[in-house]
Image 1: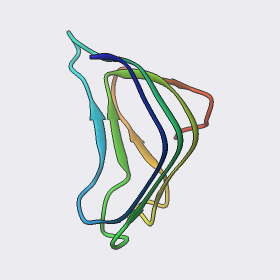
Image 2 (image 1 turned 90 degrees about the vertical axis):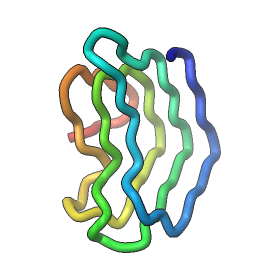
Image 3 (image 1 turned 90 degrees about the horizontal axis):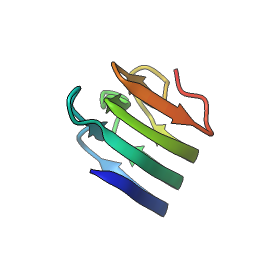
Image 4 (image 1 turned 180 degrees about the horizontal axis):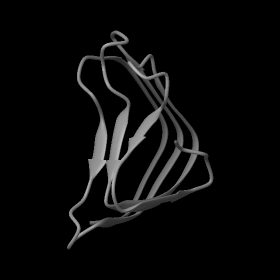
Length: 85
């Protein structure tokens, strides 16, 4: 999968964590998230999980989370435009 754009999205009451997860041999490429806000139902929900993907993020929030961070970054992630831990 590649060249995916999500803009001006607001989700509220999320009860499960969100993720963008590719595979080492088949990463997800060129994901653009712009003005995306996910409000979760409680702090027990994990941050957005990113693995084996590339993209450009701008004004993306995920809250509340059990770590206080918007994202959990695992292997093979390259994202520009917004700092991610």
